[in-house]
Image (tube, helix red, strand yellow):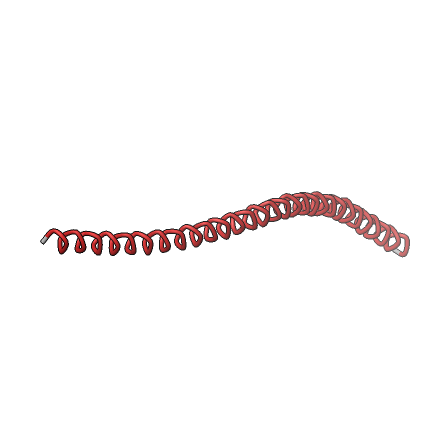
Length: 106
């Protein structure tokens, strides 16, 4: 009976040891799976970070281009205003000349 109890305890111990070993193996598999997943996520994060840096650079370049285009537009607008003013002045001078000729002819 005591030896029977000892055998029973030994079987329980063996079962628990077996369960513990299965848990260790399962834990190691899961830990490796998570490590691989973390590696994948880190690689993905690095790629996305590189993509963001590239997009930031493109955005900066576009902003510079837009700024240059606006400056050019402003210069052309000023030039157009000057030319328009010169054109009105020339039209006024031409009208004055025409009036002089028509008054001299009359």
